Length: 213
Image 1 (cartoon, rainbow, N blue to C red):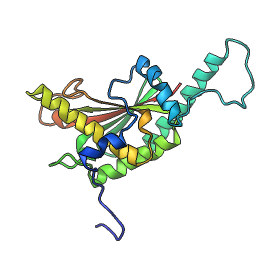
Image 2: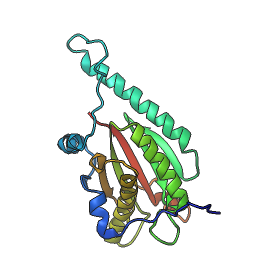
Image 3: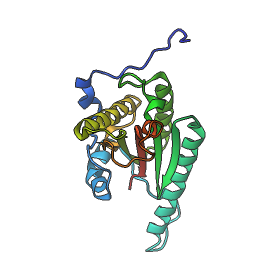
Image 4: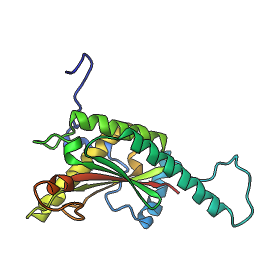
């Protein structure tokens, strides 16, 4: 039961999404893309993940190793915070090298009958946003996926809509769009069988979080 002051989240009109996603890149988050995005990211007030200035100066050649150690510790701490905060059905947190991936099954964050963030999804994504604000020296790739569909173009559109919808939500929770890469991958990269149960898992959003360097 919703108490006084409780407001159900509703995505803003689609025509306004460009405003909320101004600065986001609509492409895969490759190393080349991250380098190209750096000026936009820094121009928006973004911070790079580097060795703290107050740390003792190291000899030549040690800075890269030291920066890598700082990055590993930073991402490990974020992974732990995400894992501890997101212990709920339909959500998982995984490591992919240095990156951290949050997998959100569509049914866990969206209404079953329409393309809209559910009240449960509001809670989950608000938690993700809170942790992303804490660990703000990071880039995000928000990728949407569908189950197997005969119409590949429709699958792409649907998956992109899901990804953009999550991006808009995070933008409204003070996550800078300049940190975001947004893509819709349709039915590519299934993580479960294409049966009645597996399809529900393949309909998902993956938020891949990478250190900003």
